[in-house]
Image (cartoon, rainbow over all chains, first blue to last red; front, side, top):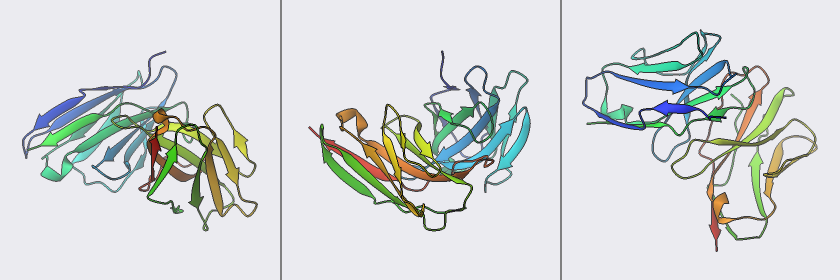
Amino acid sequence: DAGVTQSPTHLIKTRGQQVTLRCSPISGHKSVSWYQQVLGQGPQFIFQYYEKEERGRGNFPDRFSARQFPNYSSELNVNALLLGDSALYLCASSRFIGTEAFFGQGTRLTVV
Amino acid sequence: DAKTTQPNSMESNEEEPVHLPCNHSTISGTDYIHWYRQLPSQGPEYVIHGLTSNVNNRMASLAIAEDRKSSTLILHRATLRDAAVYYCILRDTNDYKLSFGAGTTVTVRA
């Protein structure tokens, strides 16, 4: 079975631009979460979606938004990029809320 | 969020056991103790979790103190592939997120 897949793996954006990151969960998993990991720190929770509804939001500005599609895939959007948004963005899927989370390899975003 | 305290780093020799401590003195009765690890250039991966009793799986063992204020992740025979950052996380059954701290960086010497 395929694991959690994220695309793209790397990208470089300029300050002020917008970016969309994509995540495909493991088949049968209905929950998708997004995390931001800055170099040298543990991942920080951004959003969780379950059955296409937002179920949790971390302490991130409104520039960050996400959605989940009927096939349970998800997108994370970040507007008006800042240099501080440079990080590894991780997507995790789980069968239900609170069950074991399976992480993708992440998308490395560099803002210049 | 309940907090955990872990050492910043630990070193081990290959094929020797590794005992990773975690303190969680403010744990509540409904908090499960989860361990995840993150290998270099990869996303975190689930290792093990438990509530009150000790737990074993193919990757590791989890020993939980009787008062649940601390726990220890045990890697029985460390391999070079076990070099990673190990995160101890408290999570309620209905908690939608994982709250990662800085974790413990484990180095395995050949």
